[in-house]
Image 1 (cartoon, one colour):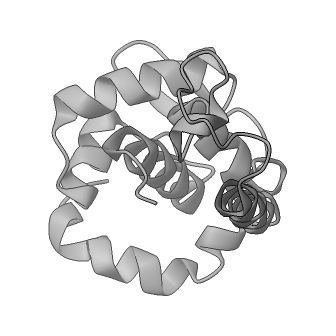
Image 2 (tube, rainbow, N blue to C red; image 1 turned 180 degrees about the vertical axis):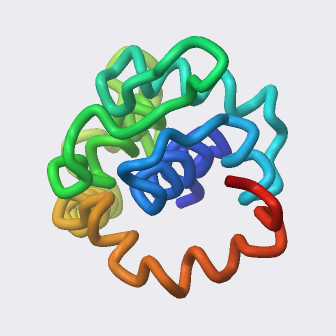
Length: 149
């Protein structure tokens, strides 16, 4: 299984914003810190705002900050949103399935169990959990942020 770039950008944005809490963070800062295209992050941050994960502040000193506490945002909910339906195999989608083994295939059942286990782990992980080592994480960003704030 491979998460999309969009998922990783959303999670990296939330992680960075949580690391800098309570400061207001700009898309430019996240872009520099993670070496991600600002254009990609503009879309991600806009949707994070629309979905209630971040609060966006307009204007000269604008930016973003978490709209909910970091310990109330799970990685699982973000992945479900950014990945859409997680159809790892064709038979997971009844509308497009052409496999004649549906309902009797143990491989499909195993993959379903594996997906549930994967999501269960992500559901137990919050944005607060992925920022628990705040100092070590922020130290990695120092070269990209020399002179910033």
